Image 1 (spheres, rainbow, N blue to C red):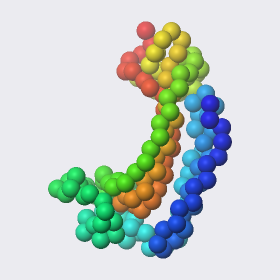
Image 2: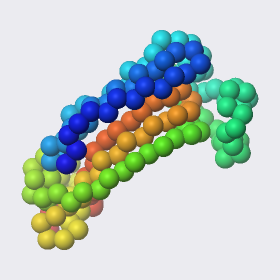
Image 3: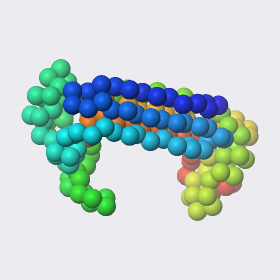
Image 4: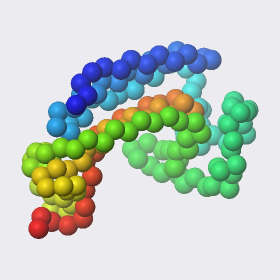
Length: 159
C-alpha cells in the first residue's frame, strides 16, 4: 500500500514547473493526483494540442519523429477546442500491480459498472489493482504528469 507524497521540480527554459502529486491508496481509491503548471507561453496555449512537427523538431532536435509523420489529428470539442490524439514524444512511466480482496474491490465499484464488468479474479478471493504514474517530459501540451489506480476487469455480470 502506497501512502505518501511525491514532489517533482523540473526547470524549463521559460518557466519552472512544479508538479505536485499526492497519491494515497485505500483499497484502490485514488484520493488526489494533480499537476500545477507554471506561467508562460506554453505549446498548448500557442497551438491547442496541434503543434506542427517542425516546431517539435526545432525545440527538441534529439527526438525521433518518424513515428508521428503521416499521422493525422482530428479537431475535437471536449468543453474547449483541441486536437486529438495528443502526441507524447518523450515519457517515463512506472506501474505497480498488487492483489486485493475481491469483495472489497466489488464494494468500491458503482452498481452501474458492476452490471457490465466484474473485477478479474486471479485466484480465489483475490483481484488485481494497478497503480501507475506517467511523466510526459515532452508532448503536445508541454510537460505534464498523470497518475491513476485501476482494477483489472472482465466483461459480464457476476456468475
